[in-house]
Image 1: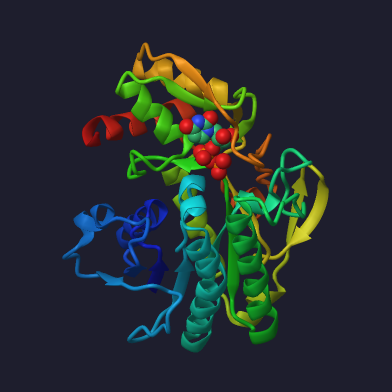
Image 2 (image 1 turned 60 degrees about the horizontal axis):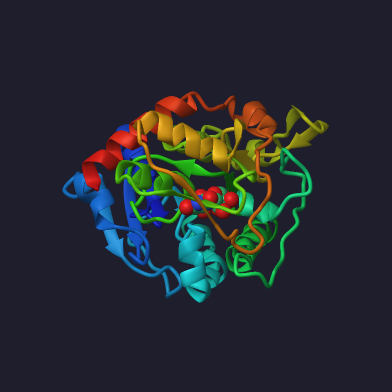
Length: 334
Ligand code: UDP
């Protein structure tokens, strides 16, 4: 396949590029480098099946030649970044998604949207199945990201229903691994960098809020499985296909065009993550508490029944191994 990845210079985009090139596909990365970094792609420059275009997907979009798939991963994704760039975040989720969907339609390419567990907001249901509609405050500082992604999902379904584009939506839960920026602002990278530098670990609030952390390789494998699902089928066979899912909330049927959670269901409190990082880095850093950001979700854990049924996917890398690999990475770069 010839595949365009928007946000290709980001943490996830670069891992997806690696995995797709390893499977023999051709990859075009597009990124405006607002939060993406060329360092993430340095090892791919010069690869015969790889190319990079510095471009903002909110502008008029044109790509030479055929495309088989478009992966829309462009967006600031760390709370720190989307609060610093609120308007760019809303634009890429809204106008950017519209432009990229238009490109997929024009090329007859399948399309996958990088959506997020943030569409569930501060959830009143735990774990979160895809059928949960969420609890989002549209006017909170986080709302820029949550609502941009909710709009992006709605636009994706509209292109699927109205224009018949073969679309997929992945709802990505907390993910970490090599190539996160040391000052990305997210909890795992912050804690590892702080522990390695002997600085206090910054726990926001009482640290009893929960998250469920997935290693980037597991996540990328799940996303690519969803993208590739039924690539051997005709469009008629594809749209008809429904999967029976027996989930935590009972049985349902779902098609591959509906959102699919990808994440690791092992749920920990932020305090537990802090202690695990201290143990694995053998750091003697202290823990300090800082104010909890507004509308910080109190719990988060994916129900991955759909991913299991549709993709036969589940995470394989244990959290401790994944943390050790990430600690090794940060030891080299900081
Ligand atoms: N957090 C923290 N210390 C940090 C960064 C984050 O305690 O230095 C908390 C944050 O308040 C949230 C959780 O860790 O409850 C995960 O935050 P992150 O920014 O990684 O991602 P989110 O799940 O909020 O998008």
